[in-house]
Length: 156
View 1 (cartoon, rainbow, N blue to C red):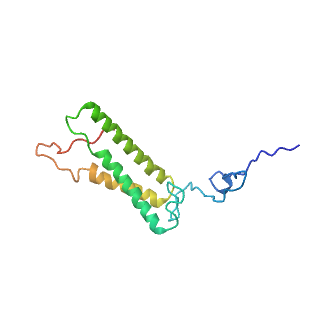
View 2: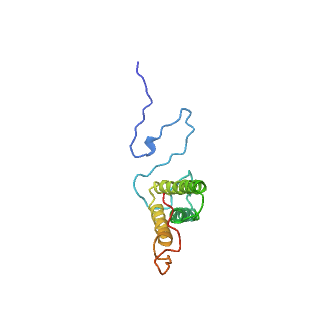
View 3: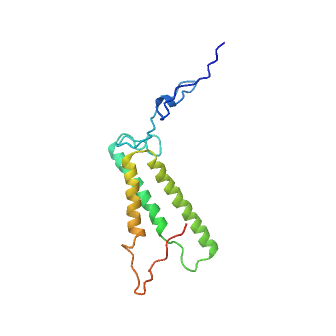
């Protein structure tokens, strides 16, 4: 008596052969997960079906990723805690901001894991632009005695 264990061939790269079929065969949509960088607007970023096959939606998704990376840099280099604030309130605010920053940073990282070169460039551009505006000395103003007019960035 021969036993069938239901093994399927797998190509090791997330191709069509690596997806197992359910018992009732109702799954008809198979996606290929890229494991190398690729160019093109036909990418699936973060959510199934997003941005879709529309080039305009792809451009919008690149803008959203760039803006999210920019926001991560803004949170990283801003100080939302006023001097003289109580330790408990400041600690809670600092913790919430750290959680927001890390959540957004991981969201950008997951978008980059789509291996779409446009997404990668949009994420890097957002981080670079955000650092340039909020982290570099280019836009900083200093008092004559050398003290910065703003507080140091949030240390996380």
